[in-house]
Length: 505
Length: 132
Image (spheres, each protein chain N blue to C red):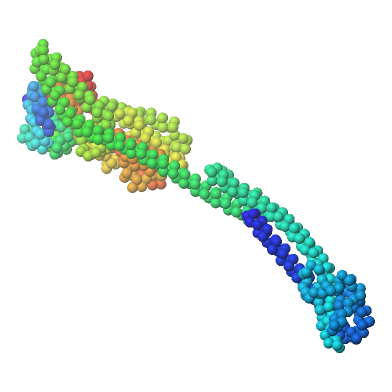
């Protein structure tokens, strides 16, 4: 840009100079010529209006006075054939007359002029030559002055240009450099404003604003992308889990179906082998083989049980007649230790619950899960967690129980929170595998379905009561199956079952 | 001789239990379905019914309830092969062995025995329930 300005200046300045000079010269010349002509006219007039022409003496004097009194260097009068010259004129100057009427030409610095006169004897001409020297000198001086002025202007304008260049380009370069730094990834840099020029300050401010906005957008986009990547990963994880769960389900279904068939097949095998052993003589050689068959059949029975356990169906060995209240109390102690002070824990236990056949570990896990859900519903504002265990009497909420569970054989464990509650739509889906109202990454949505599975595998049921804005309570019903019920002859059924498992070892 | 009725859809199970009880000195009747069993009970009164739970048609729990209703003095032993028996994919509501047996108990069964069980235990239970 500076170069352009310089070039323009370089082109304009001479033009300007010559233009100025031209005008100056022209005006000087015109002034000179006008003056000269006027003078000539005046002289001609004075000759015309007097009798000097008639008197050669007077004429000679007049000619001399003209020569002396003005800047004319040549004075000649032609009267017909007679020629009169000023006597003071130099010999070398005689006969130099040229009709040139042009200023500055011919190199002799004289402007010649001839004026016709009214003479008595016919044509008379006054010829004058004026010295151009002074004017030329003045022109020269003017030219010199113009040159000086132009040079000064050039220098000043150069200096100004340089200053302007520095003044303007430095902030521009700074902006440029800073932009490059930002573009190369150093987003913490801001554009510097190293100048007092208002336009640049505004520009820098606007650019910085743009940068901040873009950075903001950048960050948001990046966060979004990270979010997407995370949910994508989560989705894939969940898909893998789902596939795994589905495979388990298939195995479970298969196992369930097979178990039934196998158990129905194993029973006659065991019974017939037993009968055959009874029919055999004490020392029969076949006894050994048959006993082996018996052992194998019992082994098969255990394997079928294991398969069912693996697919998380309930198998009696995991169940023990337990004091539910004490299991829950133990769990609550743990829960109290884990909950923050913002959660107020209230418990109530009916000691008459007695013993219920449960898998103690599963029941503990179930309670922990429900308490954990309750806590998550109350993390923001705290609240109250209530845990209640009681035996149900005959006239309570009968509609919640599944068929087959009569009320006086039921222990109900209730876990309640004072959180946000759930509406009908959520309540209906709460036990659905992978259903969760939490954000991606928090919670797999498998907690309650597992709880549900555990409860059902105990022959029980689970229901949920919830009021949006007030809280939620889960009720777990565990049937009071009296596996240890008395048989009419006084023996307990557990005894017969135990003797069964003894025999099968 | 006390009569025992066996209700089970598996022929081999019926036959095996029949032979076991015959040898133990019981008069035994068999039925392949709940309805057959209840019909038989009306014709041939029995002191004890041994019934499977999972059967096509009417399931054992319903049968137990009906038998209990119609023959309040009859003793009932409920047996079951257990397992998850729904044909569709994993159904969290499916009833498990203990639940089957719990349901049977609530319906009125006196003793519940998961299959496969010992001959000795079975015979002991039958004897105990028909003792009077």
